[in-house]
Image (cartoon, rainbow, N blue to C red; front, side, top):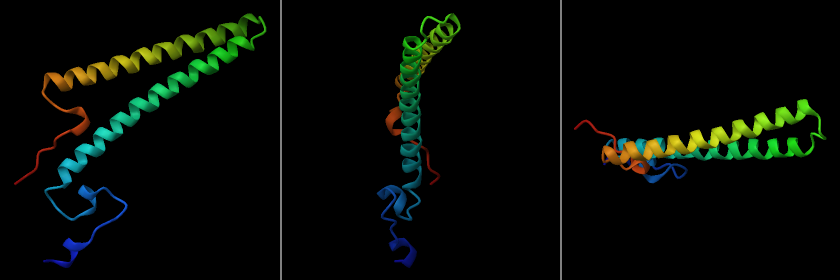
Length: 112
């Protein structure tokens, strides 16, 4: 056995840590799936953050029409962001089911 084939990186997942050409494509699929999921979670959390800050701005506007309008716009944009993220997630899942793909475990073809 070649000496490089015995090297294992303990920080990386087992699929990425070994020098195995057959493990690269499935590991890449898992990395991309994880990144897409992380982006959806971040977008959702950012929308909630803007919704909360818009609510706080509304409360602290003290009746000033300009500040109230800014707060209302922030809340409206946050709700629109939540709707867009939810719709994108639903479309993502629907396309995955239509094509028979498990979005959480994207398969990547390998060259034999």
